[in-house]
Image (tube, rainbow, N blue to C red):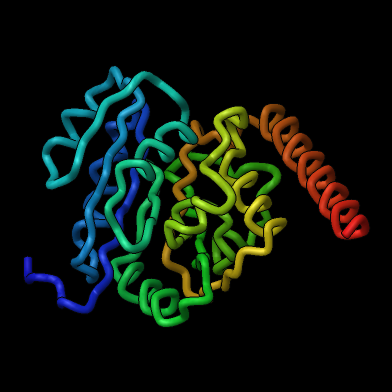
Amino acid sequence: MSPAPADQPLVSVVVPVRNNAGFLGAALRSILGGEYRNHEVIVVDNDSSDGSGDVARQFPVRYVRQPDRGQAGGRNRGIEMARGDLIAFLDSDDEWTPDKLRRQVPELWSDPDLDFNVAHMRAVLEPGVPTPPWMPPEWLTEGVCGWLPGALLARPRAFDRIGLFDPKYAATSDTDWFVRAQDAGLKWRAFPEVLLRWRIHGTNQSYRRGELQADLLSVLRASVVRKRQAARSGHAG
């Protein structure tokens, strides 16, 4: 592996995992085999029992095991451990394109006013897995803005300003974070290229339709409350 150029910002890549040994290796290879070299990879193991930890320790990563605190808790632990100038994420069952950080980092780093950017993604069905009934067909053929942590690249100040991922949302803590970021007026930009492969394999949280709907309603209600409070505060001022 060639050394990183001196002017590249360090990117901390957080990978939470819970019993995903079958996919984790491919996810880590997609990071470590990428074209951007100045990164640290932090694998947070939420008490896996399937050998995910053994898989992680085969790679040059910072590995930590903790009690199962869900994806939000795993991401939050990684953020707390991060030493980078920028923070990125990858779920243990997804993959980046090789040019993900090489293309996304300069766009964010060159504009000090931006708090984060979001790449496009494409859904990829594993063999024999049906398309989720709620998924638009174009998600499998065209790039769409990736409102998932795997498409996010953020400055640490974004988390300082609005907080970490909220673990009370078992299935939509990422959606809640993005909504809070926009409600708070963080500056962001969509990156138009597809840099994330979102793998659909039948056991994704996305298939838990009832839990997703309940969490999404709660996220939206919280957003409405924040906006009303902000409006009252502005009116009072």
